[in-house]
Length: 236
Image (tube, rainbow, N blue to C red):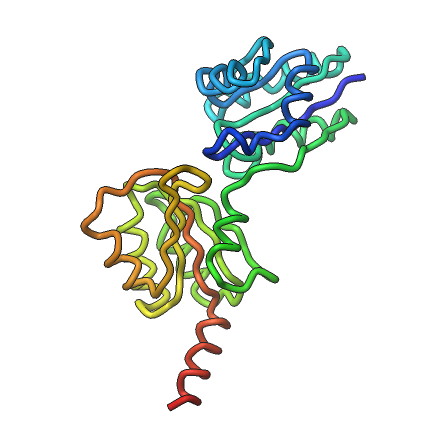
């Protein structure tokens, strides 16, 4: 019976791969990968021998039809991204939507994603939050930040290490330098780092350092900031 499996892969530590993920990758007909080189390395580590095809944001529209044809012909296909869960700031959404349109079963395995450990590590409210992924690099970036200025929920962003300082500067301008935030870097890896404080304090921590690794920024919502200031005033 045909089925599309979305298989999360480790965001850093290979020991975070689940037994079930390995089993699915071993049993499927072939694997779709965001970067075939990274996926082949992962497969070799777990002794998996499968054909791997390229499926990334630059070719997913073109390859979509062929993948659907294979699924309708009865194949089982697994989709993986470079790290984490497919569809979360990675290719996956278009394929899943097309499978649903064609009544093809889709199953997403639970597994690694960077946003949840970063959120929990932050010490900010986790009961209600919004995931914004990567901000627009240029056009629409400041407009998006202005739209989030009054967001009451905790906000989670992905960012490149090369743009972290610029982003923190823009956060200070938009949300204020005293807004509480947390930056998580190299999650699950040897040099994992979680830095907590105000936006200005976190900026100071990173401004003279060579920043490496994938970055997750967790920012307090406006409600949390207001309540925090109210508590500070009551203690005076």
